[in-house]
Length: 220
Image (cartoon, rainbow, N blue to C red; front, side, top):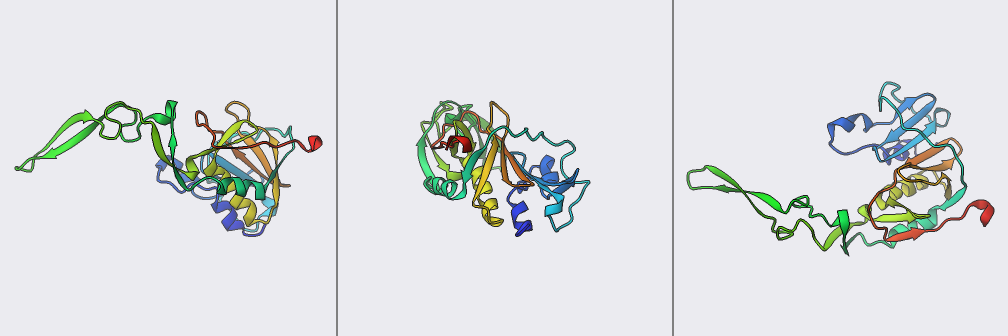
């Protein structure tokens, strides 16, 4: 598989949560190589890989990859175009769960610290200056990666779809096939090519800013 290291780097976890440290590198299990950031996971048949990977690393238990039941073509050019159509950062109207103030986490109160002339610190709670104590805001500055794109009615984070687009480009694939359309809280299954599959979790409660309507191959 060409650009193997770069390809897997798209999916590993790069954050600082200690309980996800096991996801910072690809790992081997049951004839596959896996990489995941806990929201998206790729598995590649070991026979397609040239590098060696730790069979003791990664998650103790793996999520299930749903059985294929559909055949929706996911065109790389179309995916890139819809991603590029979303501004890198945009002020958007928010409601519901999205409208909770990030500064006070929806509580409406924040802790203030004051140091007096003797160097002693004093603490008290006051109304959040961002939301004026309401716990809610009407608009937010939201980066492209946090926006949602609906694929056949189910929303996914644009940042995760960007990972898939970059990975497809890394190994020279013009399109993938959605072989399981996400239902409820189950992941969507995408076959990038024979032996390479990705599962991606939908995002709940985020209004999509763009939509992709795909047809099954026998409907085209």
